[in-house]
Length: 481
Image (tube, rainbow, N blue to C red; front, side, top):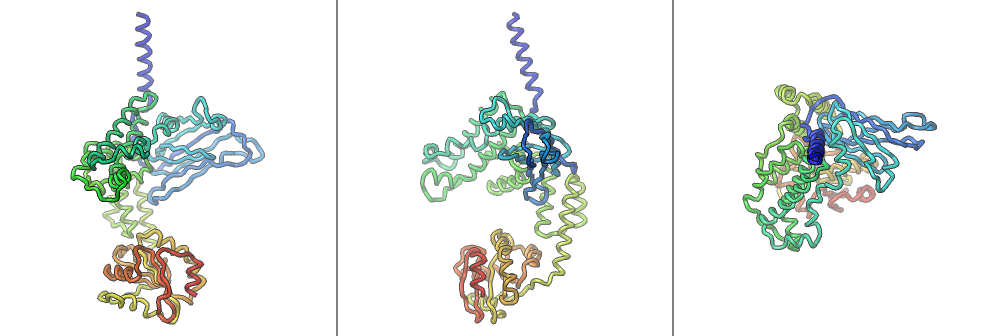
């Protein structure tokens, strides 16, 4: 009887302990109050100033930003107490990356909340420590501890290990597209069973891992054609049945908040749009706490396309996403300032040719006004990253050859007109916006299958050379002299 009571008491204790852990991930919270990370590195002995780095995605920029804290809080000649403290100006619940020496830690943060870290140097330097070298306390401690301890064990890509090798890919040989999808879904279900049976993990961490597994599953089903070609050693297009992506309606991967922590929250939001577009399942449900971010994204994308906000837009933003309104309006103010600066710029000129010109006459009309000096014709687009990167790279050449060489830039309707108008004031030279058929004809004339494409014309108007992709400043300067 005593033995039974002891077992019941033990089970009760285990249940109570499990209930005491974080069972669910928090919904996305919005605030202008910064998140904080405080910590101490035990047995920290270096006399040099080292930095604890925190990388996060700044709202509205889509770019990674780094905050840092010098660990040594005293003079370099004195011992350090190993403490550090960072303030992270995130606007909503998001994951950040902490780096110390060669170690990187992913941490989930919420604006206005504080996370504490304790790092033990001796354990960190031990290849086989008997206990975790890093322990979190404070906000979301259970989740962050599980992520540190078990993140590598439950890395999302591992659900696809059975088909990552040649032996595994052989299992996919001869499968139809639907059979391939079902095979991948079984891999997900098997991995999920193992995850849910692991009693070491808190519920919040299980939700997170499940979301990462679903994400990998979706990506792998999207890549059915590539994977089946590799498995079957073929090069063909596999026909996808109409109901191929219907499983997403049952899975509803974006309804749990966990999906939005599988990567930076903003990147996850953009991923949902990609999945919806590729799968044509546009009515997939989203977690309610993403509503503010969805609204904010819509207006940020509009501003990025150089559309200033109207009074109605501003009122909507303040009502529907109050936690992000100040940041969105700051982006709009920056756009308005840029528009005013563009109006004052005299470093560029818009030139037109007859939109009815065809064939070889198009290029003849483009270069006719520039005889007497060497000419660089740059075929580009506003959406082309390599085009814009090359424009920055060539600046020293343009400066060295100022007044001695003409530079013209040609694009077409694939570059939104308003985006083009707002981009070219920063690109010194003459700008042409030709019709779609003219742009295609020009690229065809120079046998170009991509942009940027450059054509160099000599003083007499003869084509001297062409390059698909930027050839480098040394080559360009030599060709233009």
